[in-house]
Length: 69
Image (cartoon, rainbow, N blue to C red; front, side, top):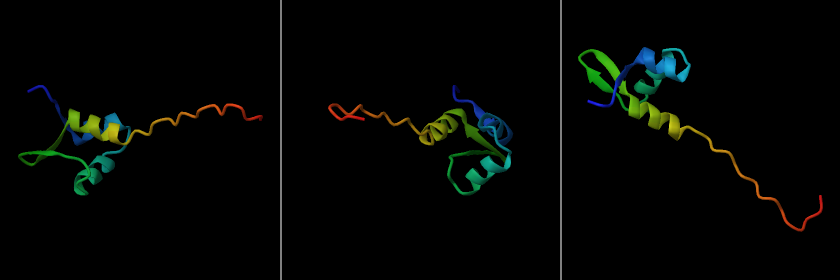
């Protein structure tokens, strides 16, 4: 098993949030999770994909040629 299962507390630590935020993501079904008995776990790859999906890329502005400033 290569993909590590993270606890809600570990997810909150990675995201730099309180535990309430990942719990809300789970409740709203905005992130995939695994039930292990009564425990909830999130795969590290799922968390990485969630972070990647929320990443805003920089816009690259092209210089306008022939236009005086």
